[in-house]
Structure formats: C-alpha cells, structure tokens
Image 1 (cartoon, rainbow, N blue to C red):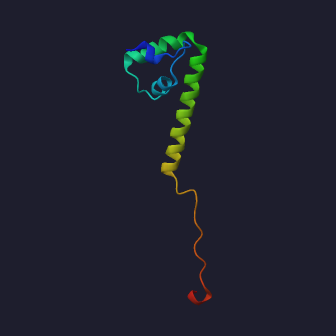
Image 2: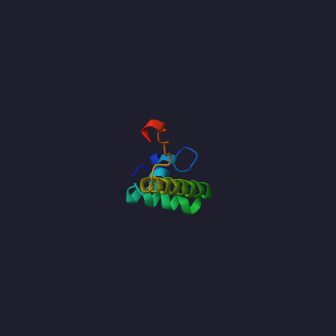
Length: 84
C-alpha cells in the first residue's frame, strides 16, 4: 500500500482512488485505509456518496438502454400513390 497515492496534498482522498473505491476495484488493504479515513473525514465521505450515486445512475441508465428499444424511431418513407 502506498498511502501517498491514496491521499492528496490537502489530506483528503485522491479523486481517482475514490472512483476505484466506489467501483469496488481497490485492493483490500487500500480499501481498509480509505474506510478508516472516511470515519474521520466528512468531505471525503460526501465525495464517496456523490461518486456512488453517480455510478448507480450510470449503471441504471445503461441497464435501461440495454433493455429498451431504440429511443429514436425514424419515420417510414412516404409511399407514392402508385405503390398503394
């Protein structure tokens, strides 16, 4: 674990690490370090909550897109009177 990579200069979590944490992509030891920090830091807890909400919204949108018909339906070409 490299604590310097998890934290940024102001004593808060690195935004990239917050994203990886929210996606469940952190190694266990790094996630534990973040968990400890979140117990003490309201600012980072808020960033994690916002990131979690964003990820949930993107996943919900992706599921909706995958399960629905195309949103835009193109009009059928007009038939001429001779083809009717």
